[in-house]
Amino acid sequence: MLIKENGSILIPIDYSKQSLSAIKHSYSLAKQTKSKLILMHVFANAADENKANLEKLAQETAAESGLTVETLSLKGDIFDQTDKMAEKLKATLIVAGLDTHVRFRSFMGRSSASKFIKNAPCPVLTVRTLDHKETFKNIVLPFDLTPQSREKVPIVIQVAQYYKADIRIVSVFDPSDSKYENKLLPYLQQVKKYIKEKNVNATNKSIPAKNVAEAIVDYANKNECDLIVQMNKTDTSFGEMFSGTASQEMVDISNIPVLTINPMKRADMPLSY
Image 1 (cartoon, rainbow, N blue to C red):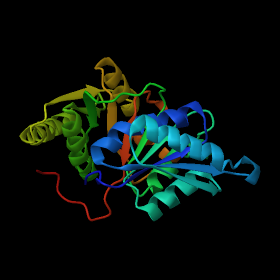
Image 2: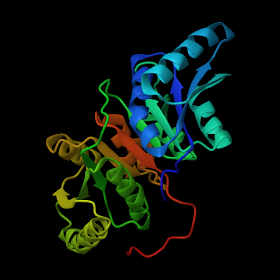
Image 3: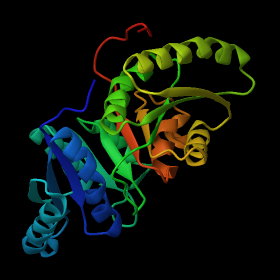
Image 4: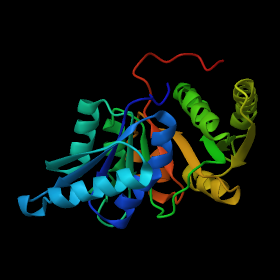
């Protein structure tokens, strides 16, 4: 699984600072993947539609970035329309700014960011910070023993190769579960070896902690990491309907951009390289 090149990056905007920042976050990846940008404004009421402002923003974005920029103006729910249009346009990436107005609604006590991301037909980059970087130096690769975890490895390598970045493989385990840690370590070494064979520098770290998302975000901040790449969890237990999965929480709490990838729709395969 890779980010496709020569495609389009879809950016839902509502003119909030975070959604405008998301546009700038897309520049570098768009250049690396030779992609065009599509700025999509979704409005609830006809009075909120302003095609003139949207076209002006597109012109300014094209002038600033040197990229091809197109626009979409649609009525409806911004997150539903984002998934629908990403599917229709065969978008290669969605970049979404999260904050005040671009906010996922509450559903059964949890953020519906998970619903939006789970339904997305392509990887989703979520950003909360207003600061954007032209490059990534350290990319966090959370890893566990699920068969789907390995599916994000090719994309992480792809992005690392674009920017000559290092990959930080991180696994979090329950402090009371030493058997899991012992089983995990050989796989971490295996993944690190595979990455290095692709001429990308990699390190691995296992962290004892109860909260997976908090441990990974804390590690990322302490080690000057610029991007977290995670696999969206496919199954949600009854308990997780209320507490949220680690992937959902990562999107909610991370001050560092998070690239979320949905598992491929195929039968599980053995975890090996």
